[in-house]
Amino acid sequence: MPKYKPQHSRLLFIDREIAKGRYPNCSQLAGDYEVSAKTIQRDLDYMRYQLDAPIEYSAKHRGYYYTEPNYQLPAISVKESDLFAIYLAEKLLTQYEGTPLYDSLRSVFRKIEESLPAKTTVDLGQDHARFTVFPPSNTLIRPGIWEKVAEAIRLSRRIRVVYRTPGTEPAARDLDPYHGVRFEGDWYVVAHCHRRNDIRTFSLARMESVELLPTDFRIPTTFDFTRLSGSHFGVHWSDNEYQVKIHFNREVAGYIRERRWHPTQQIDEHPDGSVVLSLTVNHLLELKRWVLSWGEMAEVIAPRSFADEVKTTIDGMRGKYRSTPESA
Image (cartoon, rainbow, N blue to C red):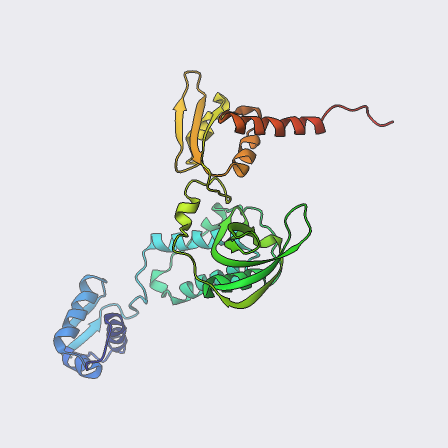
């Protein structure tokens, strides 16, 4: 059976032999690498015409040489724009700082940099000072929690967690973790909760402990994360669907127009410069928080039940800020 000899390995071999300055020819290279002379000739043509390698044939020495003595075949083919994209991607890693992923991904970027020959590097000069990434605030996850949950997802193993829901005492739950989600600085796991016998979303920051159980599980064929989360607004979802319309004043309409807030969104323009944002969502909790963040510039106009819910929240907030006599 012939040996499997990938082209990239041959190219690196040819590059090393030519760089030694001994003027190897096709026959010599083919014999040393145990392939045909035609294969070597095709590789030389590829290096010359596709990779722009400065290869010439010396009739005097009856072999090949580099016209640029210090030339080295790049270990990988990378354009300058690709390198700059890698540089920016590394800066974006700051949003994962404080998680186990951060150190691992930084290590990967270091290896990429080390694998690039000098010929393909790009001098960024002072450009690094002209790009800044402001990472979102991150929740605090107890040591070891993220690793155990990630392992359980990877191995399809059940976990027992002590979970702290805001306003209640911590309680043990057995979970089958189906899917991990990163959203606005927090890590979540979508899991089947055996306590509730339902698929729920759990924040890793609220887990006080995680125990990997010996029980394996299979994700049901009916579970489709894309379908489940398709009309979500935020990280929460349900089986309901709400047709929501929100009116935004002219002062902030430009901000609404310039961003895709939701896959189902539709924006209707009004003569006075205001807009109505329509979207279909399956959960209202985070949408309510978002609407409230716009203050008096936003008004829910449908459904009526959602508008009433927002009004109740605003009334409660107003009650906390009623004027009171100053303390003596």
